[in-house]
Picture (cartoon, rainbow, N blue to C red):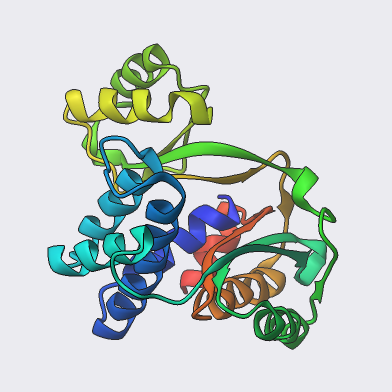
Length: 249
């Protein structure tokens, strides 16, 4: 099981608390502001905005909160100036990490990222040190009981998806960014439920780690994502099934 997939399950479980939901809303508001700033405030004309709004609605963000964020992005309401930053580094076991941030002060965020990496024995690196290990892809997570593998393959591959994987509990569908919307619509049309649909960084290859390093890597994922400036964290570690079972014990 890829580290990102394992962490995604943990994150979804943690996301039910009020504090986590509030943090999600804050981060998604930033995404909406940035999307509206760069592409305008009409979701029908701005795919990035539409996807951000979809994600916001998926975690029950109020419509008026979404509307305010759009107005901040288009300049109708005053807001702080957020900057998109990517931090790259290595975690336990030499695992590669990419951290996507939206910050209003890079001079604050950079040293804070460095401290978080160092807290678990990792190291923040320079621009480009690990990004070559990742490709930007679309990914869809689908519960195993939502469909059969055969039916999913027929729908997803026909829509342009390039890969379908299963860990027994969930299917992961991967596609090129150019066909993300096409695959998304095909899944919806065939009533195939998704628990997440996102465009993000997918590792070209993974690093298999033992239970001790897995705990440290997942801890780094958590403390990074708990930072207010962090929008997403990607890593290239793989957790074998027997290690994942040990972590749950």
